[in-house]
Image (tube, rainbow, N blue to C red; front, side, top):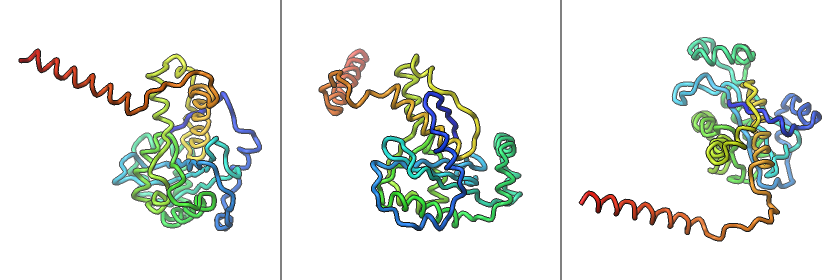
Length: 251
């Protein structure tokens, strides 16, 4: 849904090429025995609009990475959900233009996949790599919006995932406020607006932040000794003092 292109560090060609293999639903039923360290379940949806009450998911892609952002098995799940022409005719100008130019509109009309089929296939794909419930973290750009639609269309998938999310857009917005100079150097969007491309770019964007913005794990810089609770308590006291001061002025 939201595309971010990271030029600072790219996925090897052999990895990207393997993502273009067509999904085999039977492979998703094969048992996966190895454990993935801190799995992130990256999902991106393309919709007929942004109203989660009336619009629908028409394309979805899922890529699973470990906590270091390595793509598991160089594999992904992607599918297009059928939608009739009368529904597509209700799309707004942005969706008409972008889904039309990307070829998604025609793919939706040609698809024979139902929402129920896609939910089952997606759940099998995720369980293959993340079999234990509540361990995979839903990840992406502005992923809260995808999650809103999934609550309606793919509730069983969300039930299997952890309630927490990793939203790369949040990190981007914080960086703009915390370090504008560095944030201005982050890679730009490609504007592809296809589910798979958006996920790959979101992964690369988070990798850029990990490489360029976050504190390295082995940094020799001294860590702040205060706990979060202590810091929050100090902020709360300042708010109370300011409130008392204003009330005294009013009296």
